[in-house]
Length: 385
Ligand code: PMP
Ligand code: GLN
Image (spheres, protein in one colour):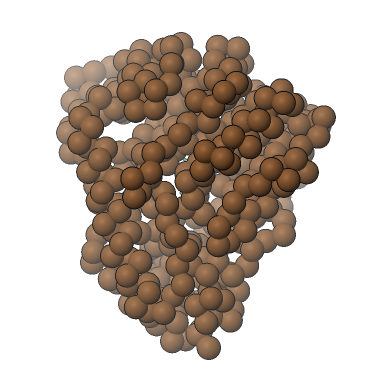
């Protein structure tokens, strides 16, 4: 067996969802909504299943979806994307895997920001890359020029960046984006920009794609996911958008990972991306409302929540909430003894872990949120000072 996988634990999302099912707990751990998917997009997929092709899609994706992705980013983010710059993948996860396989060689250094999405580091290591971490800390999780400069060397090949950020729920400011862009341009480094949460930004914020910064269009691989945009995480339709020089080698990696992905779901996503602006705005305001209900409940229960600028996650600082146990202990007991599953944020660090913050998913209907809050009140009574 490859030694990397011999020692790798099961993903925290599978672990916590397994425990939630086993103990009948409300699952505020793994990020998935329990409302909000557009019925017309589901119907479009059903029609495509019955009446469309059920054979292999083209390797780089259905032309209709590649065109829809390009149009969508032109309309919402002002990006100039040619259809040929889009490769459809089996979720953002496969997009990340293909990009890392194609862009990282043995000994290349890859700069990553902790906390980080759990797939990045194993993929980088499997490709022979050497992770170099920039550590972000609560409550502000800010990126500074000094910290980035320390992580860069002449061996840096790739920066993996996630904005809006899971789990910190941050939408990085243009000043922070500029720090990354300047470092990439100065050192001739490629950026893999995971922007799956691009439509989930709150309070009037606007998503700024990294590729739109000066000098970045030619060196950015942008990753998106229909799972997030349409609240259907099970669909696993994602994509990369990159200039030809980068898209071509990435398509070579993709062709031997999955080759292609379900044509019916692709055609429904192509339809969905063309929906009225209203859909995207309503989705955002529905999630913002769920966030506000949850934040109010957390505050009433005596929990200290960190700001939520984007994504459908909220981080809670246990120490500031008067809870003395670490994040893993809290989550393990909360799911077994209090009926609520959360994610320990230390799982998003490879080293130098922050151990007093948990992540909760608020993309839930009011009844689910209320049940989750009941569990959290029990957990506070059990583990609070
Ligand atoms: N990147 C980030 C930052 C994510 O949060 C997720 C899923 N939550 C993914 C990638 C994976 O997306 P997909 O389900 O489309 O593979
Ligand atoms: N991305 C989702 C989250 O952050 C989970 C994805 C998964 O389960 N692999 O919760």
